[in-house]
Amino acid sequence: MPCDFRLEVGHRYTMTGAPRPNTGFSGTTVAEVLAFEPGRMLAVRRQDASDANRADWTITWTLEPEGRGTRLFLVHEGFDPDDPLQTMARKIMGAGWRTYVMDALERVVEQL
Image 1: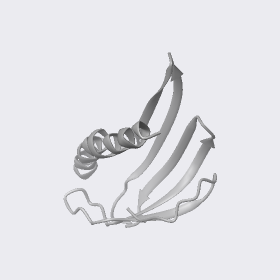
Image 2: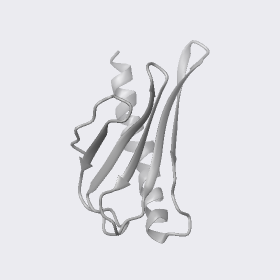
Image 3: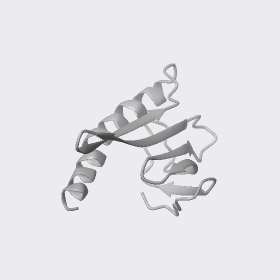
């Protein structure tokens, strides 16, 4: 998703992608950097740009030392379990985090 992200608390940015009618996703997300601790944590808030979609999520990435390495924690919260569109979005994004994002991250880390 192309975006105008800056690593700065309070920075608001947009991301665009393909609309997903089965989840109510309009194709545009408005977001804000909520918190950032260098080398440790990043939290962002994401909302669909469409007033018709009530999605309001927080995504937090946290790094914690573990043994001789580092463990990455990802928390994506704010889904409404009573909203069928958000339930579908959660299922799709959960699979995306596990496959596309984590696999891509692993490839980058292996090159370091």
